[in-house]
Length: 291
Image (cartoon, rainbow, N blue to C red):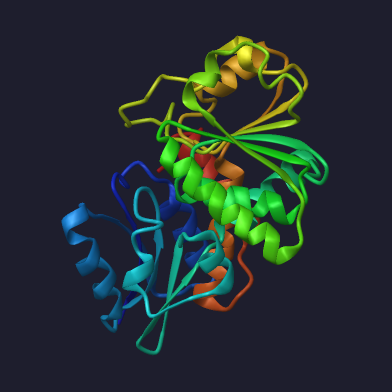
């Protein structure tokens, strides 16, 4: 009997995860199908409960449910619990376990694609949702010198900052942490000294209400900084196009998507992910249009 793994999100149909995850499953000749399970909020609890059915092995979780799924799971690993967001659910026997591979994927993308070492760097993060939480915790673990969080809803940024401060106290970390209002993005030169800017919002994402938009104007982007846009579709995003014109270095979200997906694959299957196969398939699906 075929088994299934799914992607739970809303929207989710635009995702290319099914293409590269299926390529990895086919590489090992597993009789497993990776599917898109677009889920409206009223059906989220039922979708997670459905993972207990014998044919289902687990799921990825994407926007906007990475935080909402936590109380629906039996157990959450320490990293996901600290971050407060889950992007991978693994079923073991009848137990649903939550993990976060976004933090791993984010840092691996920085190191392998741009040879960027975050330690001692000044960083600006746009957004305070599930993926932003993973990114911020990962950056603290990498000992960045300063971290500025900017979000359209100030209370979410403050809540994230409080979680980060508690984590820093427990871990003995000393990153300078600041939250700023979204309006600060119009202040030219406000982030001129930063080394890394990370977009964790959906601004610029294809098929979203923010398609074609950039969270930053060209005047806000420091020359020589690395702009890491976690939006992977389209490529390049409006933000990355502006960043190139501003003389910044750029990195799209495809690398993080595949690296976090590879870590998820290893949690489900207990085998080393064929990362090269996954990256190649993801690039073909995104850039070559081969789906």
